[in-house]
Image (cartoon, rainbow, N blue to C red; front, side, top):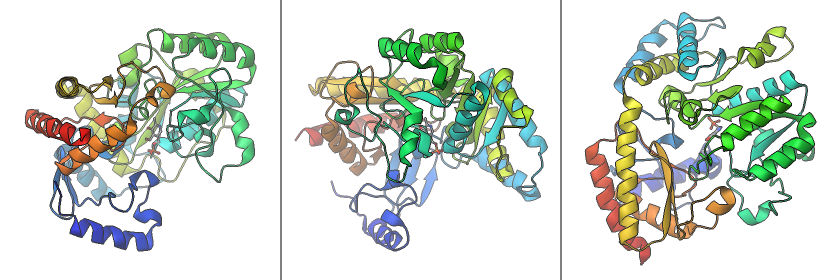
Amino acid sequence: MARNLTQTHALFEKAKQFMPYGVNSNFRYWGDEHTMVITRGEGAHIWDPDGNRYIDYRLAFGPVILGHGYRPVVERVAEVIQDGTLFAWTIPLEIQVAERILRMTDMDKVRLGNTGTEVTMHALRIARAYTGRERFIKFEGQYHGMHDYVLFSTASAPASAFGSRRNPINVQSSSGIPEGIRQYVINLPFNDLERLEETVEARWHELAAIFVEPMLGNAAGILPRPGWLEKLRELCDHYNIVLIFDEVKTGFRIAPGGAQEYFGVKADLATYAKAMGNGFPIGAIAGTQEVMGIIEGGGVSHGGTYTGNAVGVAAADATLEILETQPIIESINERGRELMDGIDEILGKADIPHCMTGLPPMFSFILGTDEEPADFRDYCAGDGGLYERLAMALIDRGVMPDSDGREPWFLCYSHGEQEIAETLTAFEEAVKDAKR
Ligand SMILES: Cc1ncc(COP(=O)(O)O)c(C=O)c1O
């Protein structure tokens, strides 16, 4: 099936004249033939400049939890910004949003930011200031944003680069990071209790934080094994290490209180962004009084010209009010479950070995193996080429997941029964294409 992409390609060619790769984020460049331009979104749908319509499961990498252009959010923002957007003073709406975040996440104190990168960077500084230690543990395949400290062993490297499990190698994800930075991060395989305990017992005195995506939101949504998050909590308590949940993808998505609520494990700090603003730029670091209180001593820098700006705050006010007071996440779960079950069945009937991963609001699947993955190394055993062919065949049929199975399928409240049914019909046809 060939879509007409004449206008899309013409606009992309023009974009390349002005922006490296023709995009404002490397993740959006899919090569000269497949990079998209989008003109409009409404609910669960997006349109390209040629008028092709897609059911959107990328949802901008997760933020759009209610739907594109969701009226109650857009209207709240439009109303609030009539009175100005930025004053370098607190606005009453910030207080309301802060109070709601704390109620939903069961934390004590919160500071707002604008992006996931910004809040993870500050969370790390707060943890270092609190403990007086400099190093931290993160896990292979996890992504915590674009700042230098965390751009190691993300899901963009092949598993072969990570070395042995006994001695994992920190794989730098970008040029331009000073050589000395790598000494601060220790990357370990997710869900590997033995390796974790051994490392913490040997190095606790250097460790400011264990920084974890509670499920691998950047590696197919791989779930924590029973006891894994509890063990992190136990080790952090025992050695006075700050446990940071990076909830930029899971926050306000897998449960109103995010992964802390879903998995029943409390963090000392949690970082949020994406779903809290339904696509408007807003982020947050929430934490215990004990750890967040370090800011009030005056020695820890946190700030920014745009933190708490009225645009993001108004969006968060409307989005979180809806998520807190209406059964939105239940509905997303239901639709996501239908979609996961349907995909599972179609792949089974087509005799494609596969394993469904993640949770209904953000799931993926691994092809070519039916072993449940525990970590990013396991994910890499799957057939990424087949996944990409399948995704591209879906996109040709008006269903848009990411072309890369590491990036979950995101569900929003606007995905209704009809969208799920249409998706499954397209999926059945796309599987036949991809197998050829
Ligand atoms: C878990 C996690 N943390 C942090 C970030 C960075 O967020 P942002 O792209 O808003 O800077 C991302 C982005 O995808 C993420 O998935």
